[in-house]
Amino acid sequence: MQNQTLNDIIEKIQNYCAYQERSMHDVRKKLRDYETPPESIEGIVQSLTEMRFIDEQRYANSFVRGKFLYKRWGRIKIRQELRGHGVAASFIDQAFASELNDDAYFETLIHIIKHKSKSIREAHPYKRKQKLAQYAAGRGFELDLIWEAIAQATSTDESDTEADEDDSWH
Image (cartoon, rainbow, N blue to C red; front, top):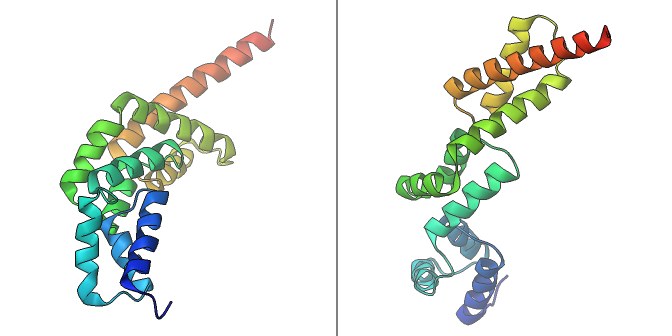
């Protein structure tokens, strides 16, 4: 994208930011892709921040909300991704506090475990639980919550199975 004026680049980057929330890291990368002169990048980022095209807290909130609700990622994976985008820990912590309800978080984890449990063909209970834990950990959930959710999910699954078996005798 050579021979662009600085005004053209600014207009493009404003549209880029207006389309969806962006981190400063994303904007800097896109400006480099547009072959923006290095000495202009920080000035443009500062200007976009002042005009509220970029807001790191808003970005962190949106990212946490989206990845949890739609991708069903856990806190560990979300935090890791946000760090990769250069978002400060304070913004990440505030986003978790405002966007994640602990009860909904745990219920989502239980739902993920129950859903995954249906597709695991392992019969041995210990190996089955290990596979469930590995899956949930890969999605970024905390190990202490994973084991608690597995215990709760498997105890309700077992009681549901027993109830189904009791119904089949009548």
